[in-house]
Length: 165
Image (cartoon, rainbow, N blue to C red; front, top):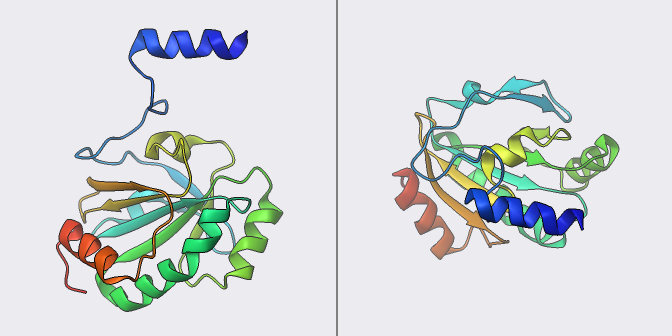
């Protein structure tokens, strides 16, 4: 009954398919504190000044696990041109920490156990990858796993972030 009521409420408000407070493509990301998983906590605005790739994942998500090695290879290949960060939607910090350690992730990762970033980024499905320009404007969103270091994906990233890979 509660689910039916919520669906009707969302449909009535025109919010079906979006998360609460979602920043859409073409809009600038709002300020948000991010709690570091194995590193320091940061503000989302700390990453302005160069293009940013944000990957939203969860430790239990099979497609997230499948794409993580290719995302790391893309991050290495992009070098200093782009900053890559990960956002875990896990409820349990120890599971997020284990995921980061298992994949030996070389880029910063943060946990979003209160769902603030998940809602702002629009992560109703995982994985979600956002491409953000140097000023903080979302230029693309991609739902689902992708082989991020494939020629097609690198062309997609280069085109949207206006960089050379």
